[in-house]
Structures are given as structure tokens and as C-alpha cells.
Image 1 (cartoon, rainbow, N blue to C red):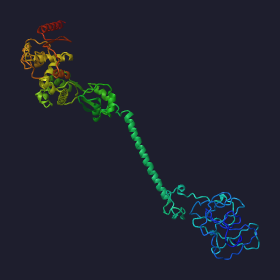
Image 2: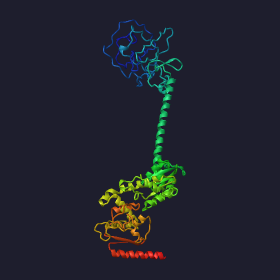
Image 3: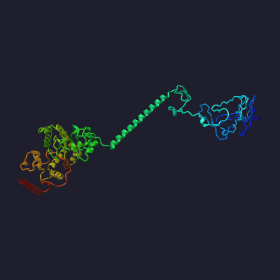
Image 4: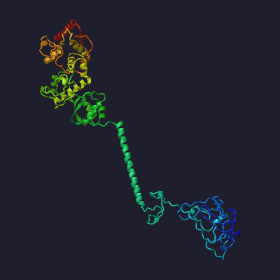
Length: 547
């Protein structure tokens, strides 16, 4: 064992030895400064010796905690690439000894000059103090400052740099080892791309602007869709204001609903929306037909005009009117010369079915039609025939006529007789039964003759209630007093209820009926009863004449 303070030799292994003067590598990477604690001892000259092996050839255990009377641990460097910075002092008390250095780490004369002895007492005058040398730190380790111990002051530590991209606005969060141009034209540590930060900021700004515009457009689109959804579900229906202007002809087909009418009006430019028209119509009963309306009307104005026959130029064809009467009504309504429409009807091409034998009688469907000045009469006639065909198809006329043993044309003829003879709708079924009973081959009471006054009036073109015996002899195929069975064709344009009665007569054995007075029609199968009823009818007629 060597003397304390002399050349290196075997060292005590106890780290608690107060006079242990070796250097130990601390976890922080700072070698302990070699100095002795003998105040009056002068620096000794070191002579080279052969390198002495360590006490143990094996690897010495490192003490992670070091020798620190305060229990403090080594502090790693904040920046591995920065220059060595002052680190915390590991000597917590003024009287602590320097931490020992393991023997293998002790410097030897042939490696480097031994560390100078620091004088703990007053400085010795007259002696040369050799310059102090600091052992270079190992790679990746910081070096402890040279000289004696100083109390560590946190304020003396240089402030950390705030040039991370997070603080300086750089768009790149990853630093590399390459140099880059600083703002002042020099080189600074960080990214090695060489791109201008201001260019990156401008690009970042453009990207933010694009994102903001996209978000604004998306929010605007969502707002627009939300507004339309709310307006469609809960908002007021779009509508024009006022009575509109100009004229437009609108055809409302038979059986059209209020909504369908609204769609037709919207397509023609009359109303702005279907819902506005439906809301304005409410519970009003609007009829099919041809209307002359204005463009750009409010829903309320359109409904009001359609309810006004004069404003809508409505032509109403009542039930049971003859064809000649319908022609005259059209001429009058359109301001045409007499027989204008009749001549057009004679030319045909009205859309009649083949079994109608070219006769429009019974096919001019009673309804309401819009016929403004200038309307083509043929167009009106075709519309009437079209509605009749649609209704007959709806009622299953052809199929049911076959079951009743009649042709479709014969059913229309029977219906026209019912319409002319019946005084009320409730009587239609009984009148139909009388017709069927009288046409039976075994009918010996009338011998198959109907004997209806309405047929004589049709043949003569009159409408008289009093038919004389002379009238019954009028020569015409329509005279059912002279010819058995049905007349050659319909005698008027019957209603839907008359068609139904012709197809489905009320059960009964009646052969006779007479209306004694309004609302008093009497049906019977007895000729005697019928004659008495006829006598009562004649008495009532004489009383009217005397008044």
C-alpha cells in the first residue's frame, strides 16, 4: 500500500474512507476532481512508474448513488448536443470529501499528469502553482467544472432555448442534425432543409384559409338544406299574390281530386304551388270541366274563380237533356249561330264507341264544362263523349248488360226512358222494373208495348205532359204506343243513377204507374187500379186549368 498522496498504488475499497483520494465516475458522467485535504502539503513531483494493475482484475461495481451527503442523484444533461453546462454540485455540505473514483478509472502518470493539490488552508507564497488540467469527458458525458467546490445556484444555469418549432411557428416538429439558414443569414441548428420559414408560414396560412373556406361552404350547405327541410315541413306554401294576368284554358278531368287539380294548375302556371291551392280550396267542392283562368294567380283567387260559373265560363249540362237541347245550349253560350253545333255533330268524329251506331244521344255526359268565348264546339262535344265513355267503363256497362240480357246500347236506351219517366231518383228502380216486365213475351196486358208518353214527345220534338189519343198515333219508330219493345235509341242523356237502375231494376210485378201529382207516383200490376189512378190524375189537371 502506498502512502496517502503519493504515487498510485493499491487503494482501500471502502468508499467511506475519509482519506480516499481517488476519482470515481459518477452517473452524471463527471469525474471527481483529484485533490488532497492536507492544508500544508506541497505538490509532489510524480515519477513515472510501470502501470500497476488494479486490485481486482474484474469489473468494479459502480455506485449509482455516488457519495452525496444530501442524497442527491446525478442529473443528466438537458441537451445531449449542447456544450457542457454547469451541473448541480454533488457535495451537499462544506466538509464533505470528494466522491472516490474507482481504481481502474484513476489516472496514471503515463496517461496524464496528476491533478494538482488544492490548498485548503491559506495559499503558500513563494511556490509555483502549476496549471490545473481537466480530464476530458467521455463521449456522451458532461464534464464537471474545474477547480474547487461551489454551491450550485439554479439561477446561474443558462436559460433553455425557446426555438422549438412549437414556439417559433415552424411547421416542422422534427429537428434534424443538418444546418439551416437563420433569419439573419447565418446558420443555426435545427432542420437542414434550407427552406424559408416565412414561405412555410405562408403555406400554412394558405392551408388554414382553404380549410376555413371548406368548413364555411359545408356549414352554408347544411344551413341551406336545413332551411329547405324546415320550410317544406313547417313553412307556408309558396304562393303568388293577386288575381294574375293573361288567360289560360285548363281542363280538369272527371274524378280528379283537389291535389290533382292543383298539379294541373301548377303545370299551366296558374298557381305557384299545389299546397297553396289545396289550402285555399279547403272543403269547397270543385267540379271537373274546362276553366279559363289567369296565370300567376294566388291559390285563393284560383279557387274563387273556379267556384264562380260566370267568371269560369261554366256551361252546365243537366241530366236527361236531349242532344238537340245540348246543341242549342252550346250555341247560345258561345254566341254561335243556331244549329252550328248540330251540324258539327252530324259530321261525326266525336269518339263514340262502335256499338253507339254513330248516334251521340245518350253520350253527351251531363256535367259542368268551361266554355269561354272562342272555344271550339267540337272540342266540347268530344269532351262530353269522353266523360260518358269513362263513366260507362267505370260502371262495367258492357259486362253487366250481357248478364241482363241486353246490349250496352239497349241499356243506355232503357236508362234514358227511366230518366224521362221517373219523377224522383227513388222511383228509378221501379220504373226500370216496369220496363222489363212489359217487354216480357208473356205480357198479354200490354202485348210488349211500353206506351210511354216521353217517346212520343221525343219523336215530335216536344215536351208535353198531356198526350192525346191523336198523339198516340203519331208515326215514328220512337212511338212506343205503336211499336213494341224499346225505341231505336236513347231519347236523352241519362244520369249515372239511371244507368245503374237500368242494370239493376227493383224486384216487383208492376206493369203500370202514373204520377197523380208531384211526389205521388203510384205503381200497380192491376189494370183497374191503374185506370182509377189515371182518372185522379186527369181531375188534378182540370183543377189546374180552372185556376
